[in-house]
Length: 81
Image (cartoon, rainbow, N blue to C red; front, side, top):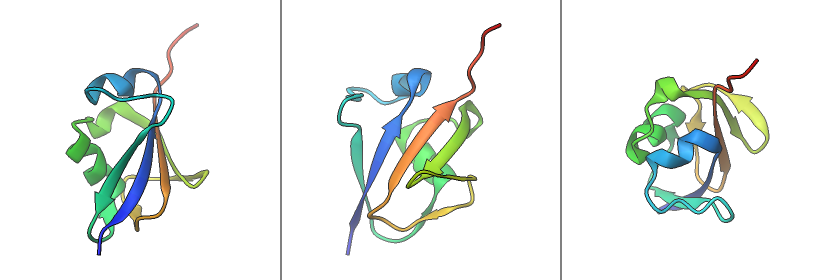
């Protein structure tokens, strides 16, 4: 049975997903647990562009298994100075 994962993308990562709506994010259905970095690949987001990934407000790495019914937020490196 598929479960939805709510995905929120920050700043430059939004450009990798056509028609991404920053107000509502996007919902991706997963049939079974999937690695965070694999979800990024499915969306066309290069994993090396992701600096921080969080599931339900907790920082996780690319090897975290997303179960479905969770909220995944992805953030790029922020430059400036």
